[in-house]
Image (cartoon, rainbow, N blue to C red):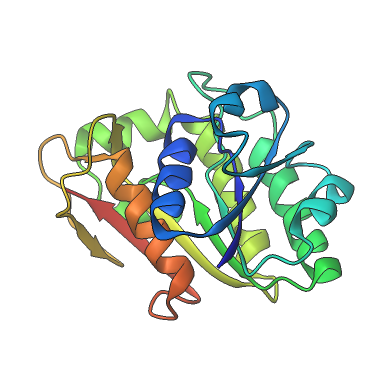
Length: 208
């Protein structure tokens, strides 16, 4: 598969790149900091650009079969409108480039998924993470309202470390305790979703 990965320099995105390499995909990455992927220069194609720029995205999307987006704000709790800006640009660029499949990384607690959160989770989502989550929800309205073949993925708290290989994936999961998920397992699911129609036009909550 010809696969475009957005957010590849981030911690979850890098796991997606590694998973796609294992699968033998032809990988293109759009990155503002290509030097962060210097160790992969002979294994992937890097296009220098910004995921909020339609023109940059069109250039990177040409000839792709699917896009996996793992965009994030790192440790910042301010969105700076990243997700809405990227969603608009991706939808418009995909139409021009002739790409339809998008697997989009969100966060558990965004949108209606908050209904199944614990009391502690709800407090965090509605206070400390409110700005991020509001912007993510707005971006997903853009994606759902587009003509893209989308899958939106809602992981619980993300952890580093090797994949466990076993995880829960459902449209709704009632949370208990302090749910978490390995980034590598999220990457595995997102990669599989790009290959399959099972989760087309659906959202997926993923946790251990």
